[in-house]
Length: 224
Image (cartoon, rainbow, N blue to C red; front, side, top):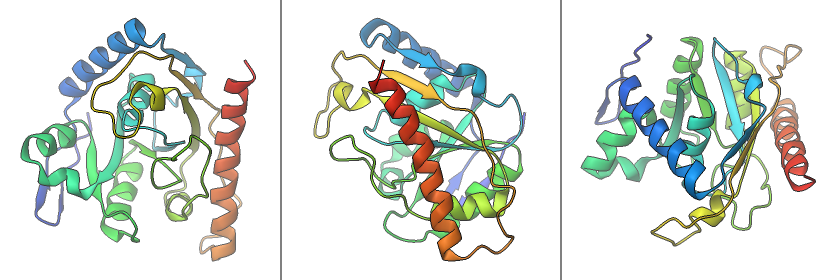
């Protein structure tokens, strides 16, 4: 089992706890099955090994654990906004579950380096190309950070669409409520023809292609 240790600012983040991740996933899956009629479509598209970027739409704080449970038995790392790591107990928990901090609204080079390190170590990293939660569930324009990582890590992108988590835990809500949730996992794809030093326009096209694949998965959900 690969264990990654790193230092990010004043936060000394230990490796991902496989035990805690597994226990948490069981709790999430059990709760979703009971209260949310949880459904995962495309489970066979999860890579069995090797680094990959899991690119997903973002509508709720529940998205990381829900997508993480859908990816089992693969582990999933993800970025979380840096202010969450200032809460001692919460910081300790989410770090053990594979989170690492990112400063939103900036080109956080530390978070990008951490992501590259994980991808090159053969891990899967969850990313939300929109950068933040959608206010109404519709896809927002992508940021270029994910395209930068695609260009430098040269790993497959696994598109994912999650639907219903915004109803389980809406913005401003503190307690979850029952609602159907579906995670739809698309086939991995690569950008093998991308230049070693792509232009900003090339990066923009990469990000837009990723959003297009996520959008197709969302359309498949809405048409069923």
